[in-house]
Amino acid sequence: MRPLTAAPGAVALAAGLLGMGALLTACADPGGLEISGPALSPSPGTEAVYVQGGGDAAGLPPLRRPAALTLSPGAALTELRWQSWGGPTAQAYGSVRGTWCRPACDPGRPYAAQVTLGGLVRSGDGEGAAAYYTRATVDPEGLPASLAHELRDLRLPVPPR
Image (cartoon, rainbow, N blue to C red; front, side, top):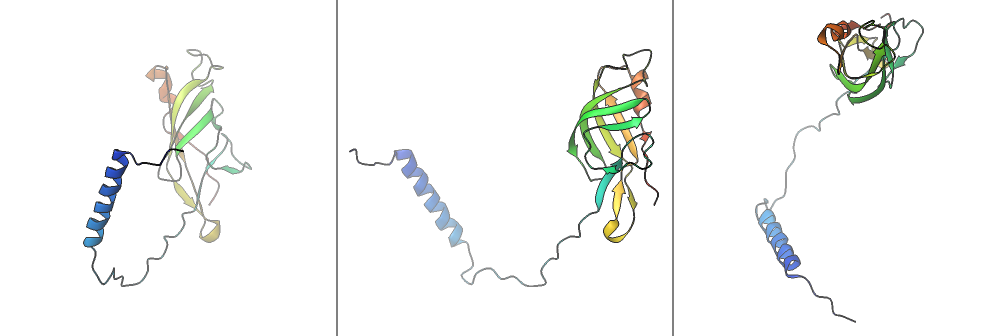
């Protein structure tokens, strides 16, 4: 059986770490760390943030980070992957398809798109409080600006307050 030996690099690393530990502890106050004052209270939880699904959302449940969303009778989002949610704006990437661009584009073809939701409004008080996104902007890739402009600043439905 071969005896265990440490590689020179491992010995140097260990010595360096021990030296740092000595340096770090040498800077500490011998009496320890003194803490005074009241403890911070946890920040209150924010209400749930939703988007109302469907162009005519009456009776439909609110959605959190939906994988698909109907923006209007002529435009729908699918395959949404959310990068952010719950703040003043929400950002996602996915696909958009619809009839809003006819006859200049294929309404059945999905177009890769960046989606931004905004216009956060609060609804309700107390435990049942929630917030809803009220606006959507969609930036489809590969469409001329003259067609994409119809997907700017779209109104999203919000339940009655």
